[in-house]
Length: 394
Length: 166
Ligand SMILES: [Fe+2]
Image 1 (cartoon, each protein chain N blue to C red):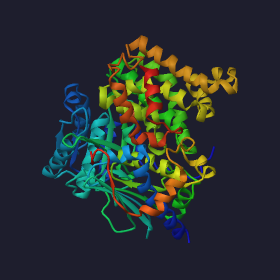
Image 2 (cartoon, protein in one colour):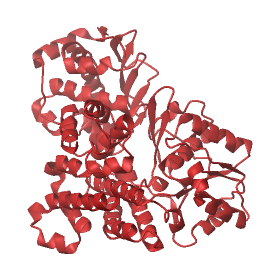
Image 3 (cartoon, each protein chain N blue to C red):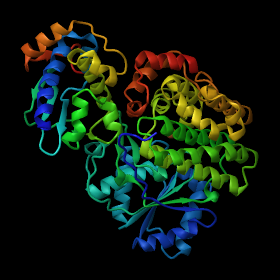
Image 4 (cartoon, rainbow over the protein chains, first blue to last red):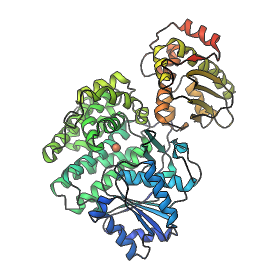
């Protein structure tokens, strides 16, 4: 399959493996950085995860000029503005962001404020709006293996006062360096390992089957799913084994590159709404909704799902399945994975188990059809379609 | 030439949208949710054409090609990328996915605009065109003749937004 037209970019340099964190200072020196701001959150500080990075910067003689560790669970405009202030106050010249999606998104937001001297981030909302070079060298150190934010051109920042979820998509937001070090994820609890892993899987599956799938994003998606098939169970069985963690970090990054260039669809649109309306954790929403979203799209992209069976279930299962049935079998493979994760970690299998109520469903459906991700789903979905899907996942 | 063709389509699309805001309950409901002060502009870079709609003082208006300050701006990068969309050969969302256009503003509003455009195109374009670009076969609440009559008649007459601007 070759699309009529597509665009692709992944300019982020990737450091992956043992000692990756110790190489950050070399990269900073390369970018002529001497006063990095370390951005993280309190929890990562108390777990000692952020301090591995802070310590490595010190040892590498480019110590943090400031540490901002007050990033909340959801990135917000006020935090972004505070970070930009801290950056200016300490005369910083780069951001090293250590955290999950919210920390990395906050860093992206702050880079917009700092670069453009923005007083109102809302002016920069949208897709391909930001012009000119980013003035902030940016190193991303993910501490979960899921969001892929370390290689994506997107950020979501909440304006809590105006009740607006601002979306930004721009190649300007791609980090300069992404650092995957197993020490960052080795301590993740099982349920978070499972949920974030399913987020990564969902990125790969949706990227592979959405409107802008292309030969390059396909490669990344296939490679991501191969790693998840092998290493998500392994990371749960042997969480302290660094190889398992590094493989999952790579899977999340690969899936991130894929969906940053091909976007995600209905599963994310509804999942975002489940998070916003009912507080369902993103990864858990992804796991619950993925088989339902695939079923909804099956008639349009069944062949594409069929191709994914090879990666989801392995060569043996792929070869023994009749080509016409491979798409459906791919959905079964995702369901089987969900069941395994449910048994091992207690991750919910239905929306009601995840805390969604009957009354939430119409509000979630209403919110989901306005979500930008819906624009890229291969099959259009209106309010009634989404409500039906929600009832099936309930 | 391409720009001229798009300008003609914009003329019909602009007025057709205003007509649908009067006669189609789904479009009425959509624009009823647009915030007061909303200005939506479709523009073709680098030098036009463009067309805009606004909600001001609870009234929906087609603003035509006049200079405005949009709150939601969809810019096609060039006429070559815009033409297939406005000739009904490619869906709006497919074009967006292909980076043929940029979007400045709130994507949620963009999704509402796209739903409206799909309905408007269902009235204005023949089925042979819309089959390829609309999510499902065009469902029309009113007749095409009524829509066209209004499209040609209303020009930029104001339409009161149901329930006021929310
Ligand atoms: Fe996700």
